[in-house]
Image 1 (tube, rainbow, N blue to C red):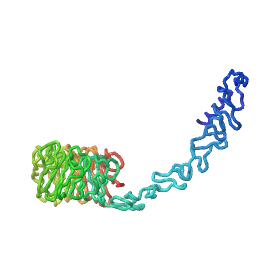
Image 2: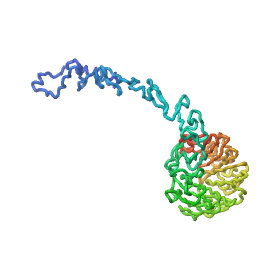
Image 3: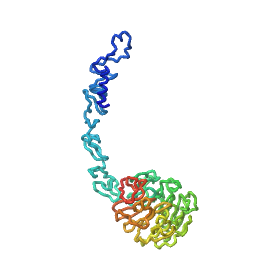
Image 4: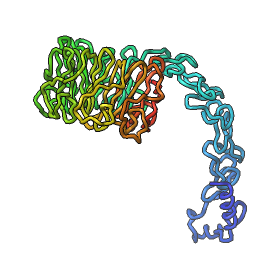
Length: 511
């Protein structure tokens, strides 16, 4: 109650004849009590010496919290009533409407109104950084020197990769898939951002995500699908985690045992693995025959092809490199199998017209691409969104050599069964084309497609690896870490927001 209100109430009490030292006109005389006319229980008792009546109570206004100095003048919560005046206890300082210990109060440190920062605490009247933090930030703000790649171990000590325990560690690879992004770091550590059905992946910033695999996986073996992730563990075991609605993670809780497994590829809702003998086995969703078995909703582990040296699982189709030829099977609605038809096939179909010396393949949504030792790129499949990089002139199902590209060392095809975007890496530069509804090709998202291979502006010139997801893309720089752009509704760009953008931005890996 404010002092003005209390004063008004006290005045009202006095006027009514109930004030201190004023005998009410209608006071009950002692004779009436003695005569039994009025019950003594109905009459307020007299106050002891040194007390004062405030309403129905007798109080010592020298010490009473609710009636300090006079009736109805109460002290603030953290105050005490001493000698009829409200004040702070010994050792505390009055700061506005409260008493604060300026030796330890983060809102009043050393003096009233001096507030400590987010990573600070008040110790002996001074704001000090948390353990593992130092004053490296703008305006002397405390920042972590344990996991900040800009200040790793000391202010200004910058890492190209990740900062772990105040020491720089390498960033080995970035994997974009579905609505999430994963990074493999030195020592087998894995970090993730975005949203996946992996229980540990739901964040707009990097979080450690290795635990669900039951331990470290073989370096470089991580593959990311639409909602599940797979890697190779020790003793020839393929371990998958995340979405398992089509048994794409395998029937065994502790992983699938595949003798001498060399590679694993997670597709939309199916998974394929390649062993040392060249046998490709697939499992999971098989409605279009993408596992190499007659179409069924779900299939267990099935041998799809033999003699392979590479495998790539797309949204609903799969391709493998066999003796310098590419064979594909599964969904073919957009001609992504490269056999000149649009008929699905669970039996592998050889892609006609490919150049010799193929060294890499990437199966995405509606399109598939391959590249050669000479750095030339050929793509086939859907072209509704210029996935073939030719302004959409060729009909879907065509095969096209991307003449605008040379010296290519990697191609990554993303997207879904409805559209794809493609990115190629050559001499440290990234060029993208195809679907662009979220800015995943690096052009403003108002352009729903990028018709020709276009350099992604804003990236450092030393990109060493790329990865295309559902509608976002990421790249790894040799000196400047991970950069991402495109869709960000689930936080897959790892920038702390859910705002999509076409301009690449470096994502600081802070585990």
